[in-house]
Length: 147
Image (cartoon, rainbow, N blue to C red; front, side, top):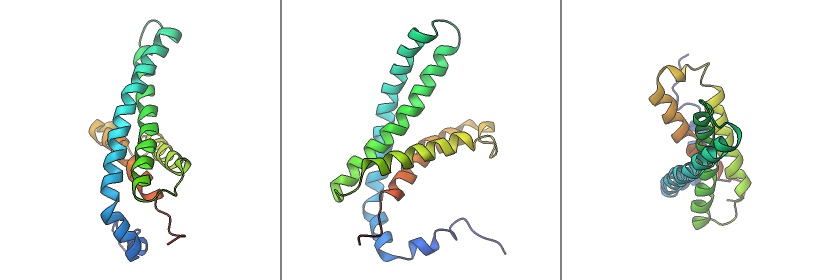
């Protein structure tokens, strides 16, 4: 039997409440997560450059600290952006849900890059790093139990 990639989401998306939520709020929350993530990643890259001066004054260590700061800053920025955007529509969600979901998605992309051969095509790797954490954070900000 052949499965399409959308077959896993069909039981979830058949619910009209979830469809209406994703149709109305998800675009705004997703976009806000990306924008906030990119802005905070600049701050993370700057902090990585400062850490380079403190811990690794020479060599390629500066590039590693800068990239590490940018990636972690992006994950934190996505969680803050999705949380802020979601509170505009429904103020009863927690920041920890956005934080854990975006960081877990970010770590999933980083750790699964080798098995899925994402490093062979860098635009796919960076696209997954940019678009997957806000997507997962947007999905996890919806709570079905209170509706």
